[in-house]
Length: 290
Image (tube, rainbow, N blue to C red; front, side, top):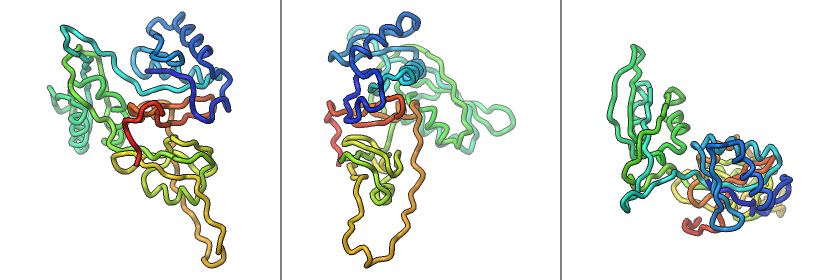
């Protein structure tokens, strides 16, 4: 995962350590006691590449740093590939899923979309539970645990173990939906959120400060959608219509782990001692918002 200094308009509001010097010193200090972690300088002076034993290992470091007062941004997790005889190899793992029969179809479809290959299926016990074994690229496991729990209504059990390096499996889509992106800096209003929530699920409620490029929700369709969550109701002709009561859905409360699983190649997680936000990466313009 890539660590970089915070470049959002809210930089310095909540954090105590915000410079690249602070970030570099803290990451290299972590190597003195965390032997399984590796830190390398990135493409720019304010970017660092941190490698570890899985997403959880690095997420624990991120959580510790934000509690210490650091403010920074992290990119999506990536697997470590190898090149042997000019052939690109990626890590594969054995995934064992225990799932009730009524949810087996949804789980099999989910693993198939992530390039998983089933090599064993057997019934377990008398409760109508099936044990599935898959060989699947590690890339396909990113964000899989939450997706499987959603597909099986919390009844599936997933275990994984590293198997070997194998041929590159091709592109894997881990997310079918786009993001709702704010295109104006300001404070969110109930009036704007009432119409915005019809486009998908929101991450924020009213009265929250947002900035241009911040992800404020999940779009219900593929592709990103820009919208204005700071729009205020016009004050003209206020007595011509009866005041309507605005009913807002409860915003999604995403944790640090959820945000890291959610983001794609062109998105970042902004980590501060008080807030966790997601935003579009301003350096990548591959995906255009509508």
